[in-house]
Length: 423
Image 1 (cartoon, helix red, strand yellow):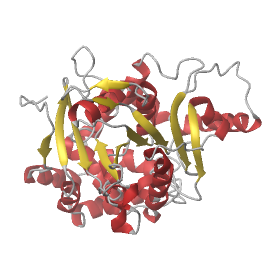
Image 2 (cartoon, helix red, strand yellow):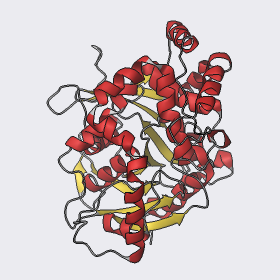
Image 3 (tube, one colour):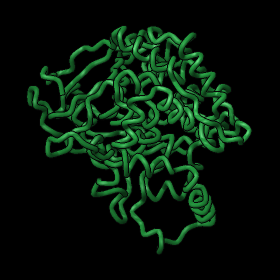
């Protein structure tokens, strides 16, 4: 961590030095294409060499990092220290309406191989709906943190103060402290996420639910409610507190589990590498921009609703914006530590016979990394109040189907923010 300490949020601007861009161009100019497996460019063996060559060509001659940097800096960015952990986050206050409740704080969390780039174009939709044909009463105070070890946040810090992997439950604790200790919210808040963001947000709701009890404020002594009012997910990643060998499953659950197990070896090999040898992999990802791009873009192809061609869903600019956040911050290696962190976490799943009782919504995008689980599986883990089977879209919901995602978030939180039961 840097010598300067930020006990309160410090305004931050992304400003990548020109020498870093020059170094990148030199590396791109010298990249060595590998010998290609003759699989007809099907992506079956990994990133298609032809696509990768096109991406590198555009990266060198058509891509403009300054455009992305300006898009990030359009929003209020901050750095803050929570204990020894340095965090970066964006916070955009929502539109306030006279004689109405203030905008609901909403913590939106990315995963791997995503970043804050996923949410840059939905921040305004969530914070200022009236500017996009919506109702200002649906406005959120939008908080978008970078996970520890990702982007502009510092490397993850363990409980003993050493640098090293931490799990999603520990990150959830940091998020709660960010909202209440550093941003001084004295009202409940919402959480939203997919990928790692879904697991972090789930632990946040489990460990810090809103209750009827009040806590003494450290600033003035007034009473205030604390905790997560509602949880919105676009992926289910938290394990239920059951014995998979003894539980009785519905026919839909049995079919879903069988499919997940069949596809596990093909789809999750990257997880085993990142969980067991993140340091070795990190050397390659931190030293080769093209290697990093190949490692990441393969997931955008495989996990999105793109019919095999990522260009049908994502522009080259968008793919590279996300890759550049990893490359220019030097966090491609430390981002993978989260897979090691969860394997070392004491509680990898919910305690036996417990679930997240915070009201929960699930937006089921059909082309996700794993097929969305049936409703009865979700109800083993969550107090499910809203379940939306989406007509299209995949893992990167905020990029692929932003309007569908935003409207589902608004619909779920609308009654909760006014104290109604969302049944």
